Length: 218
Image 1 (cartoon, rainbow, N blue to C red):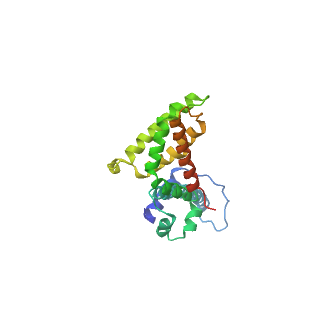
Image 2: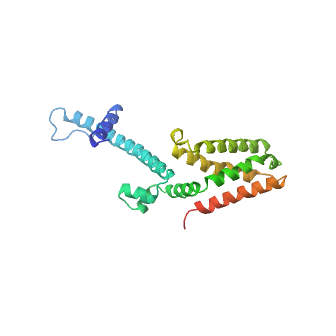
Image 3: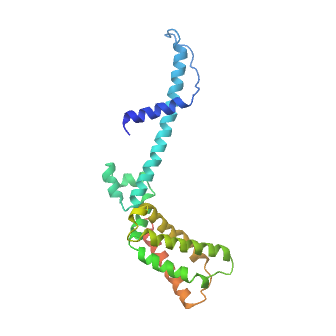
């Protein structure tokens, strides 16, 4: 969008909603109906300020969303810095959540197969991990895990590039580990079989590795 187009947008927004302001009263130098015209101009000025704030906030949200998407696609803060012309520290300060996204995406990118394998083991042995209480909630989480695994298989298939949102698949994989697996591990009851114990142990290992790798740098 050019500066002229942005200006037209602000004027359009400013003109769409009348704004009333306090009339400062007549001035000694007024000529003709300048008092009324001045009051109307002050109203347009107030409306333009409001529109400017709205546009700025909307642009900020769009920019933040675009920055996050690039990081989910593997960009680093240094890559963002090269585009913005500012330091990585400036990017980190403006979008503090991107550091976490970068660490999660980096770890996930190196462990897709590990996650799929161990989450699959956990799903296959879920019936032997049912807790004493909260059966319905636990089985709902197991269904979510199985659905997440099916999506992961489809999202990361060799022919998935043209039918998959590349950024969304990483978010979904992150949810699979950080939300669904975490909640299942937290709710799981005592393993009823050695295989279930192995599956639970492996899932805990994945989650511990995830937490360690994605922890905020001190």
